[in-house]
Image (cartoon, rainbow, N blue to C red; front, side, top):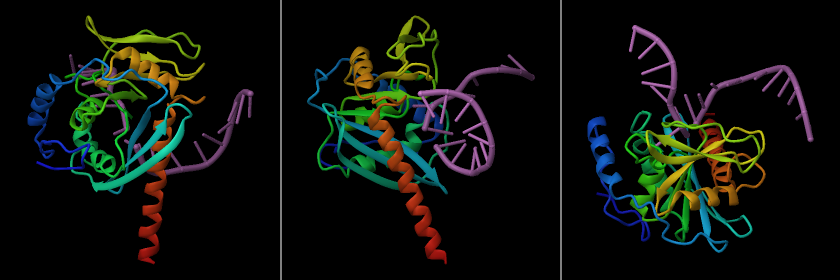
Length: 239
DNA sequence: GCGACAG
DNA sequence: ATCTTGTCGC
């Protein structure tokens, strides 16, 4: 059990699980995911973009909190941790979850919404990393991935703002969103405490002319910057 | 056996 | 994810 910070403080499960145990945990926790919006997403809210990167077996996570009304950055945080779990499709949260929670714990105040680079319920067991982080922090979350993990869909129209549904059998598990004309669409899905329509709206509303929503773009940039500085620091130390 | 497979 | 050179287009 681990205690993170006030707003993230919850009873957390162990992360060093065997694949079989991890799958069982996902199936169990997936039942607790709430697919209804806790709050009406409005302009008066903050959205935290979350992303992670790697360098020499060290995972780096970055969080950038953006004010949805003017898309201005209000807070940032980074964290690093040795990787302790391999990348296995469908179990990404066991690899990135620990560092991400560490970075989130450094924020001064809890964001109103988490936008995570990866899937939410558009997952084999309906429990992708966005759902996992949202559930553990009890903060509404959305999954916004650059490629799909599971599901079928029809290509949305080429114009920006076009969407189509991502389905798995008869179930709708997410949406395919063309955030701008003639770019590859992104895969949006419910993370936790949000419904699909609000998730799509939040993603489109936070896009600033680029394919990815601003919170995630900034988290991406920050994470890369962080990895570069640690790389040069290591280099100068050796010399 | 073959293709699919978040980051 | 990360490693990499050039290249097409606004």
